Amino acid sequence: MGRNMTAVTPMPGRGLHVTCLAVMVLCGVHLAVTLFYYLDVHVYTGQMMRRFGNFMESERLSIPANSTGPSSAGPTRTGSSTAVSSPPPLQPCPETSPLLVGPLEIGFSQSVNLEDVQKINPLVREGGRFAPVECTALQKVAIIIPFRNRLQHLNYWLYYLHPILQRQQLDYGVYVINQHGEDTFNRAKLLNVGFMEALKVYDYSCFVFSDVDLIPMDDRNIYKCYSQPRHLAVSMDKFGFRLPYNQYFGGISALSKEQHEKINGFPNDYWGWGGEDDDIYNRIVFKGMSISRPSGGIGKCRMIRHNRDQNNAPNPQRFNRISQTRQTMQHDGLNSLVYKVLEVKKYPLYTFIDVDIGGPGRPPSR
Ligand code: BGC
Image (cartoon, rainbow, N blue to C red):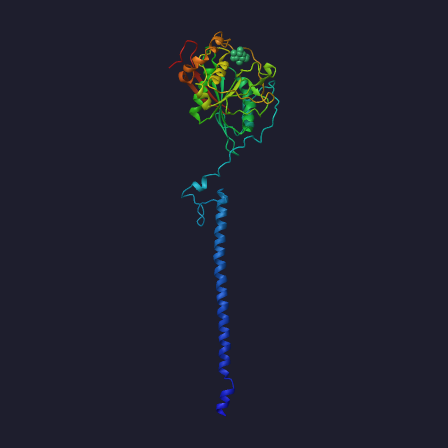
């Protein structure tokens, strides 16, 4: 019987053993799962915190979100500062500026106060420099203005042109080249001086040569350079809003650095009014280039009325000189330019360069 009982009756200790085993297995699984989640959540949270920390730091330092700068440690100010300080690269400005407004009202009845002009052009830097902040300008343009005793005209020019040039999204500087002394005026030589002096300041690729008394009536007349030398003053009020003759290249023109150098710059030997622009036209044609112009509508300009300047009488030699451009341009121009800069002053809206260019038969002082 003892043997039978042993054979059919389950042992009470064995049932307990199985239950204990099951409970232990369950506890183990629970512990493992808990441990797994605990560790996972902490690692994940740590990563998130680090990421958030980096984000906050990069926001504070204006680092682009996809910056390739240090990730776990975050940007530091003590290490390499390039990732921190370099702003994202600007896109090139569009071919046509979206800021242009077209035709403009131009008048000269009210006087201009330069402090007011400064206030309405807060982005123009000392020396009359500007570059757009929203994009990289397509051209670096030096505006060269030959000058003597025309401060009132210059004020109008600055008042009208600074807003226009900014809307044209140009990287530009304004250079007023003042002929020192009382010798006969020489517009073309002053323009050559402006070309040379502006290049000492900045890596300009384009030069716009403008009379101080000419204001464009449409901001789509862009003060930049083209594949051919550009004439901008194509329909002036003074000439009844038309070209006085087909070869006319006076008032405002634009030449790239290469175009200007190709023609050996402008003539230095036209003293007094007239002829130098015709000589420049000849140079351009003799070097196989042609003139580019805006349409008559867009190229409208107003001239500030004034009496003839002193020491700028019509040059009686101009007709003779114009007939000899093909020969004279070889030796009269950038390759023969002699002058002496007496003073360079950076005003808030322009750079003023006072220069001794000599006079007819008088070389500049040394
Ligand atoms: C002169 C130019 C001048 C043009 C328009 C021509 O006779 O030679 O220098 O720009 O007239 O006035």
